[in-house]
Amino acid sequence: MSGAGEASPVWRPRPAEERDVPALEALIPVSVRALQAPHYSPAQMEAAIGTVFGVDRQLVRDGTYFVVEHEGRIIGCGGWSMRAALCGGDQGRDAEDPELDPRRDPARIRAFFVHPAWARRGVGRSLMAACEREISGAGFRAVAIMSTLAGEPLYASFGYRVSERCAVEMAGGMRLPVLRMDKTLSGPIQPP
Image (spheres, rainbow, N blue to C red):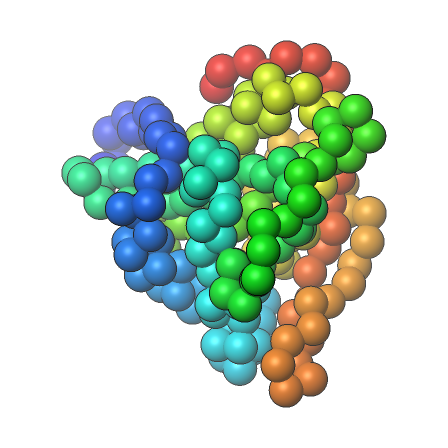
């Protein structure tokens, strides 16, 4: 970790690979339990881990999910999707989500998680910049996010606006408050 006075690292997200899935499955609960705690109850977080907060292997197969590493360890992940699902892992999903049409559908920002020791150090920003460049390159001109309450400040800093406050229904009648956020892209996204 960098100490006081040291320059912030330049993060270089890389596409996630199938071999990264065990590390992602370990990172997600650690991230959720620490960074989502100010916004959700322990029961809500535990009910969401694995279903709402989980690995979506379709994103990995599509090449649209990224990881950031430090000294060979994954410290952050996040991606985008050209498929219909707005959130959730692939647990319980029977088939691939249908593909979106970039001429009429917004791309999705999906599944951002950062290790708490690396929070607020530019990891999430580097992942967002990588996603927006790829989304623009794929021909999408709009993006939608189903954001957690904790994720709203990051996405708002990229120009996303809340369009709906809603909740994800979970097992046992539990609900997880979330925000739908949207953005229209206005041209090629430049590197950070």
